[in-house]
Length: 434
Image (cartoon, rainbow, N blue to C red; front, side, top):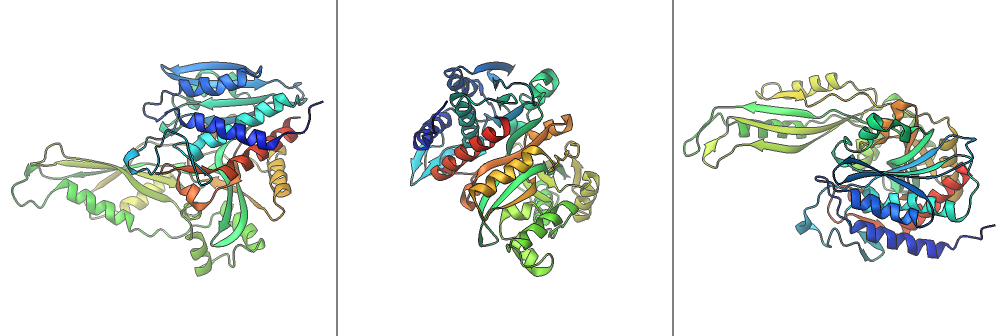
């Protein structure tokens, strides 16, 4: 029989793996995630775990590893993505692709999104193998490319070309997790994502009169577009309490983390954190602006892309109507860049959801666990329509500073959170699969 786990040794191993993983630059675009897939796969293969490498595009591979169970229950997939968003290295205080540990923090692009979680999942699989767990269900590890650019060369490719890989009952991915505070109050609040906001990107177009930039001009498309952008940025949409979020608010109130379910107190609590505010509001942020081609020519046409994320139950055509009402009189046109289906919802009445809640509450007696809507897009949105019970859950307590690191400068994950995540992820796997 396997002995007790030497957790300090496992923690050291996890840190070493993550630092080496962070040094593999998988910025997307262009991606080039195959070296990352081979790195992770090599660690699994070294311990006798079979791996498959699936090329989706040149230089881009999906890694699928499987520890077989006895087949009495259907598989659990631990899914993660190998790509990261690009960096502006000159604005970082540490090199973004060197894997630096400083003051208990692991710095590097992908530390929280989501190479750190991938290492937690990887070690859960390795420990299941080392401990010779008698598995009732197959335990799968799936690392995919291209999540940061829409997943066409990643999870979407698998859906279309290798649906056999996705023939699983349950999946764990990013999209939810823990935080050590809520609205300024100390708490151990864990969100388990059961769905996510609907992406509804909008294109703004302003058309003016071109001309020579040396002369006064009152029909500049760039100025018209800028005025429209400012108008949208100043649009106060308030806080929306939907059918799904009301239940969350009740749980927070009952846990003593919220004083009221409406009024100024609720508004202040929700607006205390950008993460919380995003969970109760349709969001919009200008991300791309294109205008002009020469310094002395006034542009005839200027465009901007506005990233919009809608709460569950919100119709994207109605959202476009609201945007157009705000822009009325500006002369700027708005259209949906593309239409995305409404995200499916995973049930909370499942064996895995109950186990996630139980593991967290056993680890932290005062933990508050709530089902949530992921405010970011994840690959789970492609599995839920297939009937997979997909949950977003990174099992650690990310500080506000760590959460602010998603897609930002100086991204980091604390060593303490990595260690916590490694232990809790394994506990979930052990109890759910063995």
